[in-house]
Amino acid sequence: MISYEEALDIISEHKLNPKTGNLPLADINGHILNENITADRDFPPFDRVSMDGIAINYQAYAEGQRVFEIEKTIGAGTPQSTLQDDKQCVQIMTGAMLPIGADTVIRYEDLTIDDNTATINVEIIRHQQNVHFKGLDKSKGDIVLSKGTVLGSPEMIVAAAVGKAELEVLLPPKAAIVTTGDELVDISETPADHQIRRSSNYGVQDLLKQWNISSDQLHLNDDKKLIINKLKSIIETNNLLVLTGGVSRGKFDYLPEVLEELGVVKHFHKVKQRPGKPFWFGTTPNGTTVFALPGNPVSTFACANIYIRYWLEKSYNITPHQVFVKLAEDVGFQPPLTYFLECNTQSNKFGELEARPSRGHGSGDFANMTQANGFVILPADKTEFKKGEVYPYVFYRKTL
Image (cartoon, rainbow, N blue to C red):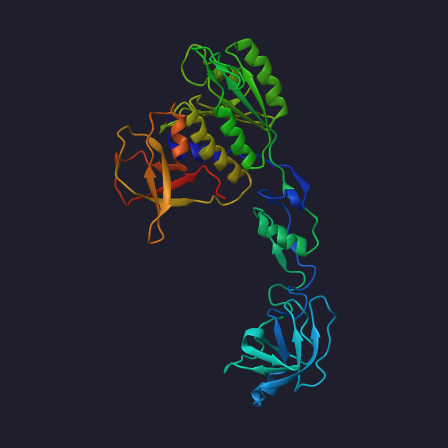
């Protein structure tokens, strides 16, 4: 067996080579930008008023004037006008172009307006206040979104502002999820006493979906010839294959030998970890990556969250978003294995994220996962983990 750290190193050496393509703006969320986006004009494109109020020439205020006659009223979307008399003012709305001759905006809250006259009621007015000046944020031609950015809602706003209706992104791999085992039946079936419904594959499918990877699902019974025939076609037509079950030492755990017969190069089999010790990883000469995960649902889910996520981050050349937590209580774990412990997290009054273990009954206790929100990763070189110690954490829930 290899260590958890060695498994990560090996996975990082066998990255996906993503294809690229253009996606409409509405579909870019979670994808990786594959181009630099530049500003097609200054940000903002004009001297923009940032408060409802009046626009004045500050020199008049500096000379002691506090009462201004309103020359006109201007709303957003109106072409730029001119303050005709620098002893007067313009009533103006947020988003409007600052008039020529005006340089300072005073908000309504600091004014009294009566009979077309505005009186300033505060002692201090700053020169050029409440004006968002042209080019202050970005100049025309500046990069506003860099290649390699993970795209989300803020990036949609920026892309729309520079007129990009679609963006070039790294396309996710074509994926398939395959369950194996005679004991498994479809979700819609009533299992016999010796059977269980397929379930862990749905958790893996949802994880892939969160990472913008659509996947096909297939189940194979414990028939070596059938498995060989089906997997051959799947490997040839997919970039990512996730297998669940059939990788341990059981008499009907055919997958390791089948994968070898199909030309999949094994990079490791078995990791010093719990859950998920029988984890198998390999690649094919045509570029298909194979994650063969243990069949127990918690093992499957932990390995998918930790290792497939890591592989994608490395493949997309993005820095992993590493979260660290403090243990909220002591934990003991004797075997010299990396321990993925289900936990719930909550911030304490000091702003620190604390993880409280949600112990289940082993890797088959998938119901316990509903009581937690992630895995704390406890290293293999210790057996006692004390309250207040800090360790890496992998969230497996999305938040609203």
